[in-house]
Length: 230
Image (tube, rainbow, N blue to C red):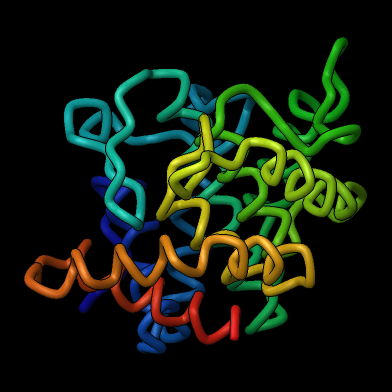
């Protein structure tokens, strides 16, 4: 499947995430993706100067890789900026080729998230809402915000304080959060997955009869989470 969709940053990021998740080729399009994302900065309408959605993106449903739907304009703008910058960081991690789009987006986002007055992102790893915080942690796990790497560990400590008795977390979307924990695979992340082992097993059972792309992603994600938790 072709990854780059010049009409949609949302679709481009989702296709890239899918290729990485299922270990499919994306390297052949890496240069084209890096070049095109520069246009998403020149648009000037991205969150805090980060990567911006296209005009068409604003009229489409925005679903996270794990299927949760984002509805608020600010949330959509921030999360896609984080996910897009994460995509560029992963490309650089593998190919060794840097991009100005990644550098500029990361710098501008860091200024808002970590350096603005009253920010607690460095102190507790949390920013804005639960979904935005997880998007930030996913970016940190991929090597974005190199001067603030410790914010991820602090964020996971904050996450553990929001556990719900029946499993999951208050504020934080379950599957999207699990995706971050699996990607991080740090000791705090593994501990969190172990705490939620029964919830994960139960949700795998509920997903067995579903076969749409989000159910398939969720089922595989939870299977990987169990492997880490063992």
